[in-house]
Amino acid sequence: MKIVIIGAGSRSFGRGQIADVLQSPEFVGRGVILSLVDEDVRALALMTRLAERIKENAGTDIAMESTTDRRQALPGADYVITAVARKRMQLWEQDFRVPLAYGFRHCLGENGGPGALFHALRSFELVVPICRDVESLCPDALLLNFTNPEARVLHAVCHLTKVRAVGICHGVFEALDAISRYLERPIDHLDVISAGMNHFYAILRVADRETGEDLLGELLQTVLNDESPRVPPLFKKIVEVYGVFTYPSDDHIGEYLSFGSEFGGVKWPYGQEYRKIHAGGVAMPTPSLEDYASGARPLDEEVLRPSGEVTVSIICDIELDRGSWRPAVNVLNSQRYVENLPSDGVVEVPAVVDASGIHPHSVGALPEPFAAHIRLQFSIIKLLTEAYRTRSKKLLLQALLLDPVVNSIRAAEEMLDEMLALQQEFLPQFS
Image 1 (cartoon, rainbow, N blue to C red):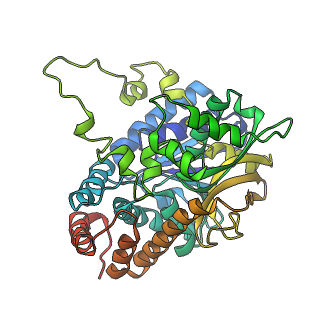
Image 2 (cartoon, rainbow, N blue to C red):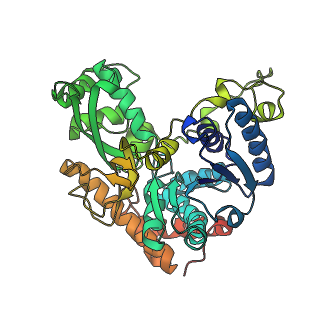
């Protein structure tokens, strides 16, 4: 079995996926090859050295290879894991600040809102060519994608390529943790079903696993009764207005709503506005991956900890025919797993995973007002994929104008021109 990680040089994603694969006992003795791929030579060399140390520490017999050329790695691949970006933080800051300068009060600028349009286009430029190589070099491989914006990227992959693909995200697990805290019950004692789109989903069922007692109403009331200042205010307002428990992170929820900035403001969480400027003194150094990779620092929980993602679990489910229940996968809604969302959109739903693949669970309908918000996003995403396919600037503008926070056609036109010029090295040409 061959697993290829593209984007392995990422210090967060790469470390986590490498640690998960190399420390998986299910892979021992199965002739597994782990192939690390990244265009950044220095980042790849660092993560390869780190992987070698983790492998030695784990005592695994997994074979390893690394290359900057994915076409060398892909032949024979059974699983291809992707998390790719270029100049992530610098371009993300533009995605957020430029639309804001034109008066568009959006949140975060990553997965929804006007900034996400440009983030998606850059990701398409990276992921679609990878998929073309998968089509020709390992057409039977399963692509497990982490590249954001997840719903937009996977939509493009599903409609523009023939690759078998599923989107992976840990967001639902944060909701599960929150549900466990609110109900003061271990999460494995609860039967929970959620569905919607990535970073914007509804908890549809919460029940006691033994008795079947419906606990959703109790959960919602507990949230409404929580007066703690730590409760995200938009999250709580969604519970109050829609009766929906969704991803408890206001910046992500707010990306899809016209009123998101009312609750989170318009600061960029990674900008200078969130950092204190100190007059003097030197901060204590923190351990770096270089220290771990070189052996200057012994491996510890900081570098060996699991990623919290389900990628390796899904691979094992398939290889070992485990028939496991997974709380969330992102897939095309082709069989109307969510009844009141379009079949050509990407939904996040539970699934059972076994030797024959990933089997999404049909969940019925979402609460209608919540579904309406998602349908608008699906329309935006559909236009964006078609704009990318046809290189149509007019379709890009139409996608922008559908966005809930965009309230001026002139400002949208000017902003689109500026961003296409600013990021032209990372985007296709539109006409």
